[in-house]
Image 1 (cartoon, rainbow, N blue to C red):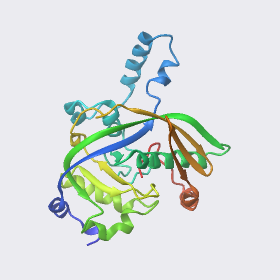
Image 2 (image 1 turned 135 degrees about the vertical axis):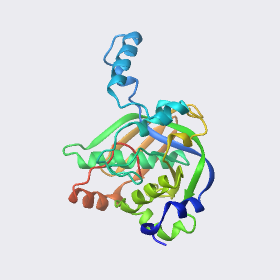
Image 3 (image 1 turned 45 degrees about the horizontal axis):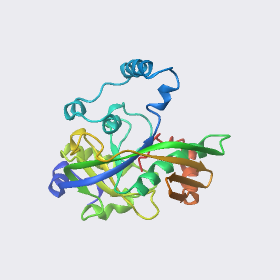
Image 4 (image 1 turned 45 degrees about the vertical axis):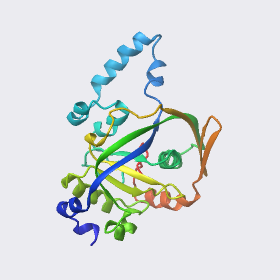
Length: 259
């Protein structure tokens, strides 16, 4: 059975209750960026309130679940032309996470590197602070690494063509399934990821452990992550042919890590 023939009923039959903890990496700019524009915390609070009024409304499901902003933000903003493995330009938001910190770093690091490579005149980015946080998900899910879905692994793992995965996510939503488990394309040591399709999939409305701050540095050939004696390094040579192909097709990478 190919991805083009999956129906909501068939996907629902293969779904099962899934509990998983996921790490996500995001740019650490929410507070510091506004604090630089004011003289004290009271003024910053006023500025944050003003900025909040200009943003899209928080989805009703996220408000009902009382989600922390780090959890509801991926569902908040309108669809865009940015590519995402399980979100097309007209689809609802997706919260992407990874089983371990290293894989989350690989996912976001790849897209920061893409921005560097696609920007003329830039030789380096950072070091810049990034926030990593862990969430808990408990919902109905499917796993693309298990049969029968694994038969289409070539489609799920394509480095730059998201046609099949986006189509599968649409069918999955129709089936009432909230989570897609899959293998990371960007983690060279084969990490595991999860794409959360609906705000009600989280077990806890808040991050389940203290946030971590990592410093991210991007060069033409490498991505470096550092924190308190810990470090990850990713060699980006393998992705240069993919970038070249994407650039030729006029594709624009998303701002965040989305596989």
